[in-house]
Image (cartoon, rainbow, N blue to C red; front, side):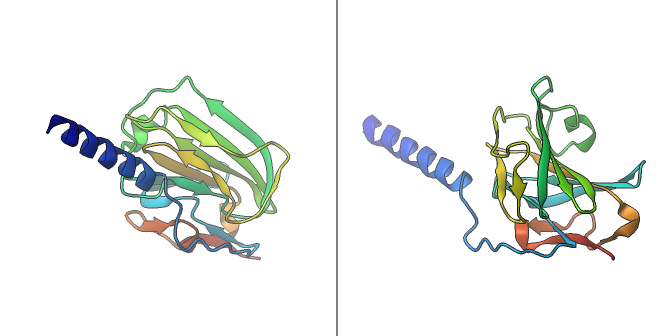
Amino acid sequence: MTYNIILLLVIILVLFILWFHRHPLNMRIFSNDDVIYSPAYGKIMKIQYLQGNKLHIAIYLSPKDIHRQYIPIDGTIIDRIYDRTGKFALAYNVNKSALNEKYITVLKSKYGNIEIYQIAGKLVRRISNYMKVGQTVTTGEEIGIIHFGSRVDIILPNISLFKLLVKEGEYMCGMDSKLGYYVK
């Protein structure tokens, strides 16, 4: 009887891991030069205007969300930085988790440099980032995955030309959700 219980627990654990690392079923790739799509699935925790004509959007990924991240607009990867010196605070605590371990991907778009942060949470100890410096990328390409948790932040430049379409508390469905668009 004990063997059956252990086997059942192992099967449940394997199914949970497979479910957690899933890809979206209906992933569509859009290519509209002016639209910024959500790089992740999850709830917008904070929208904040920064100095230097920038906008910061923090998206929290709960355990039920898809944990893969995507390129929000066409461009070229000009930098990727892995900050392994960070802590592991709770990801939904926007102020404390800014100090967490993270991967920063810098994407040069026609509107300026967009920064995408993959931020590890309390239980997470692994972030995979598939980008390479110099790589030309298109909207919807997979950036990587945060294994078991966390948060994705995006910092947008030239906000005086940007029309924001979302607000705090809204749920983002990855590439099916538009954060906003640049006005010509």
